[in-house]
Image 1: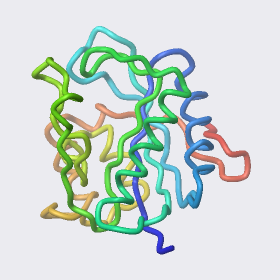
Image 2: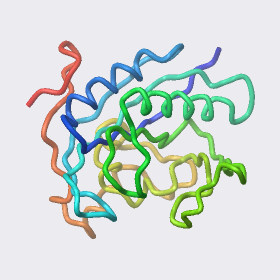
Image 3: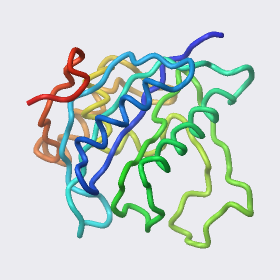
Image 4: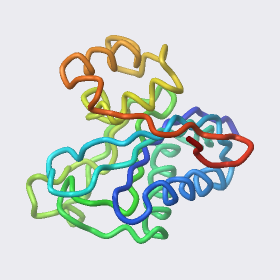
Amino acid sequence: MRTVRAYIGLGANVGDAQSTLTAAVHALAALPGASLAGVSRLYVTAPVGATDQPDFHNSVVALDVPAGPGRNTGPIALLLALKSIERAFGRQDRFRYGPRELDLDVLIFGDERMAVERPEDGRSPDPAKATRLLEVPHPEARRRLFVLAPLSDLAPDLVPPGWPESVARTRARQESSEGASAVRAIAVWDVNLGRWSD
């Protein structure tokens, strides 16, 4: 089956976040039919929205995954796999932008542009929660420096579907408004060791 390059955002701020994200990278690499194509540097970022919580550790992984047998099937299959990994790592349902044991987001899936609405019976009564089950490219990625910084480590020249400019240019634009210190790289992925090192 044909494969597609997907970019997955990783975040955590509960417990030993760096160890959690290291284990999550290995869990992603072990998904059926998947091949790990790259891991960004590890970043520390201030929380967005709900600021009374620990800083987040963030990274992005490039993963070659099966495209799926039909339209939208690949991204949805990947989303379901990510939710399963989150649950295995003890992810708890909390308020939007709250603490996360592990947060995994499909940022980009090849050249796919799609939006899948949540079924009515699966929607939260909280109006702040997304009504969409999945949207790719991720609708907030262009405005989140904690996504753009690690994504630009892996694919600076990529122009995701629907974006007017490259990841690197978008990162530079966002850094000019937030300040470069809004994200801080703390470690580099060591391919031989299979973990981040200082």
